[in-house]
Length: 190
Image 1 (tube, helix red, strand yellow):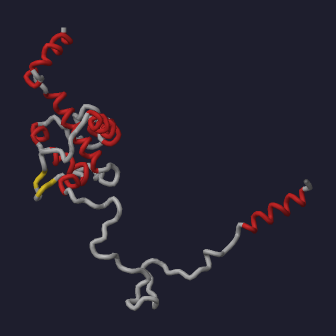
Image 2 (cartoon, one colour):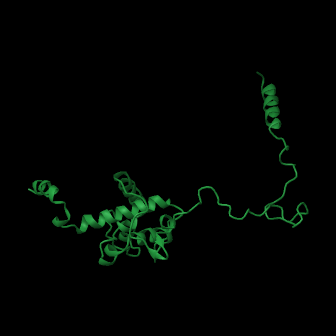
Image 3 (tube, rainbow, N blue to C red):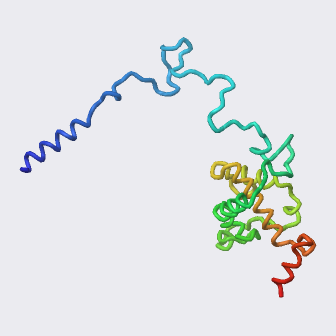
């Protein structure tokens, strides 16, 4: 194929892609005024009571961590081993840079000179209701930013469950182990 013929085919291919069909149609810019509707709007108002897909939040405790303004002390769904594994994964991604992998508040960000993060092993946070952790992850607290846009609500509950696991792992006593499992523990310590 000669270079001139190749150039001609290329030019025809490029020009055939330059169509203005949809670009030249009548349209209205969002929120711009128009005389099409009697009220002067270019778009119709949302029908009252309309809920966007994925935004129906009937269970207030599940999405706020509170009931009647009080932080809840129960999980809104049963926590399984898979939930704890997912919570650990999300914790390691979002929380451990500041709070560390064991939750003592000495993560890499803190070690590099930033503000000390809260330790989950203080008396105040050990006694805090589980809804407190959900609320702090959702809305932030002090220097901690809000994670509502980054972490789904159910994953926030899973992170809160994993924080409880961290608290138990660092503050447990032999009396916390069920009597039928203590023998296994004593065998592994020897």
